[in-house]
Image (cartoon, rainbow, N blue to C red; front, top):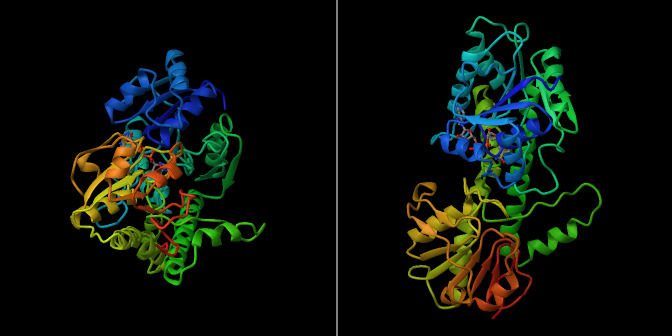
Length: 434
Ligand SMILES: NC(=O)c1ccc[n+]([C@@H]2O[C@H](COP(=O)([O-])OP(=O)(O)OC[C@H]3O[C@@H](n4cnc5c(N)ncnc54)[C@H](O)[C@@H]3O)[C@@H](O)[C@H]2O)c1
């Protein structure tokens, strides 16, 4: 594809901004659209609010006039391609919330022209590209696959992963027609190392759901293993480490306080919702969700056991939570199980504080406990003042063995602490003997 094509990315978050930057680096002009004006200002001033996207690269693209972020497409912009990377969360009822996709598609509809390429990247249930995006765009009178090109290509970004990024993770593409697939592939080939084509948008939508359902179910399995190992006095971490030496047929997954982030807890429910429409009950998905959603409760039980050994109750105890984001080395607290643990402890009357170098401040509206909180400094004074220190997210650059040596009582849900001592309790391992 000639680099003269004017590309446009709608939604400049964890998925959209890295893509916009890759298009820019490949030599395309990129128009970034985000309804969050603050985000546009950040990008236009040459900064990045996404850890994996370098501010220096954003600044260079903005300076060169290659990347520009605005809240809406202007009448003179005339993009040739549009990638939709907006959120696909769940409603309170746990059903898919496609309102962002619908709204972004309405934006595309207003600017749709013959020959334009439209690609949906938001994770969603199979059928969305055909049943929602296509239907809205065809209200213009233009026909998908004839007058304009339409495809689905799942975003596979893994925030915080230093090895795999937007440019070196193969890109799966499924177009409405072979021409749609070919054109979408040509766009990605300019900036992404490998493009893998499938026969339809539905197959491409399903690829992403298979990947994330695979993770959700395997995490559910290993979480159940942790609970049963705990019950029969075996160290699940030792078992996983040894099992992972098998060179074939085994892939290690690790237990923890529950599932978090925008993808793994949410995406499988998109699939089960869709299947419910045709009377199919996705039992594995339901079971894994049940096990994973119970993990914060098990962590709280472990904390109660640990405090009990020290003659204390949760009520009135001072509990310091280490790491509250949904995974290591990212600043994202969306759906983080640490917030569930926090809420459960507060409800039981604990005095809860946290330390997270990536979350200096926790907004009340981000979590169900409804309190504003600031991260405590990581200091010996705070560690010794706590009745119990709980490792929930094992960010790098924290001296966990130093923490274990200083704190009076520790519950480790990530196997971050190598020291074994009577005051260190671990998820999925027998309680230490005093
Ligand atoms: N975060 C991840 O790790 C990840 C990985 C793979 C796939 N995905 C998928 O990518 C999609 C986007 O997720 P994300 O994590 O990037 O979300 P995000 O919340 O980080 O970013 C989405 C952005 O879209 C903007 N937005 C919302 N509606 C808009 C509209 N109508 N017009 C313009 N901008 C709009 C928001 O302001 C926000 O900045 C989701 O479907 C998600 O499941 C995310």
